[in-house]
Length: 143
Image 1 (tube, helix red, strand yellow):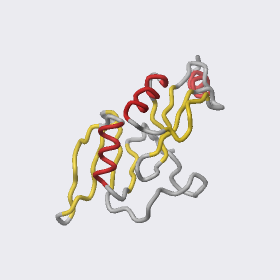
Image 2 (tube, rainbow, N blue to C red):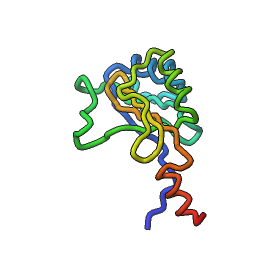
Image 3 (spheres, one colour):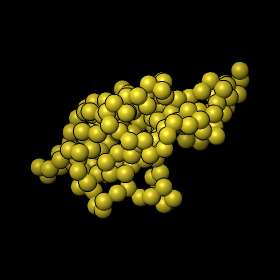
């Protein structure tokens, strides 16, 4: 059986890399870690989420938007936040529009949703102590 210890990165392709980097670094606070060139052109930018988790941004995407929510393929990225209320305030201050307001999801966690400039959906979630995930984790750990 394969053993997986973590998800290390999510990769997205974008139309306008400067616009995307502005969104993720200036509005969401990610840090650019490194750039890779291939054949004299920008090929990939790594943005830091944590020391072990990254967002890979590939330029020169085709089309105008990411696929719609119901399409087969990548659906969304979820970023855990410590305080959903503070997150909503910071998003409002940064001028980031929420595509879904803050709600308590069916799993018991608080969430809000945004999109990046290319339409990639991002869920921002505060894990609740009594959420379905927290209960499942406790059960798996035998607590």
